Amino acid sequence: MEFPEYLPDNCPPETAQAASGKVYYLVNNEPPTPEDFLSKRQKNPKLRFPKDEKECRACGISVYTEIEDLLKARQEFPGLGNLKVAVGNLTPNLGVIEPTPSRKFPSHHTLWLAIDAQAWTVFHVINITE
Image (cartoon, rainbow, N blue to C red; front, side, top):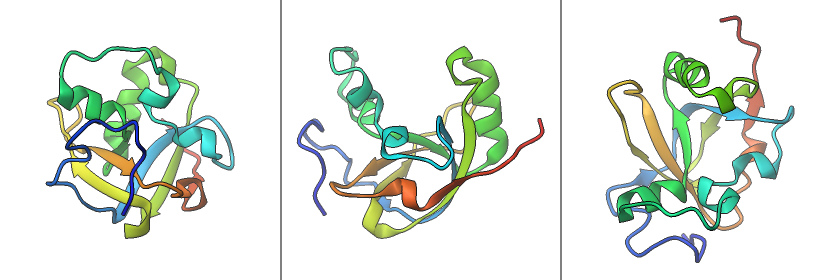
């Protein structure tokens, strides 16, 4: 599997597994579009991260296995409040995924998309009443 050239060395990490399972993700568009699946690095090419690990994570996208964590993130970070909740069933051809939990968001995972992965085709927006 090939990944974009802008990823740093050793990224995605060897510990990442083939993408699989149901995850939740925040998108701007309904239905989701390719632009919804740009990494933080792609959106902010000049932004600097203090550690290689953070740079590697910035090259992936944040997904959650528990919808409650995604909803909490949307409430805590002002820039996420207007985004729509999408759900998708990942398949190995999309890329690799690794748990990257925090105390506040234990179900957070980082998903690194392979070159030519069309993630927007496996996600759909769902209506959520918070």
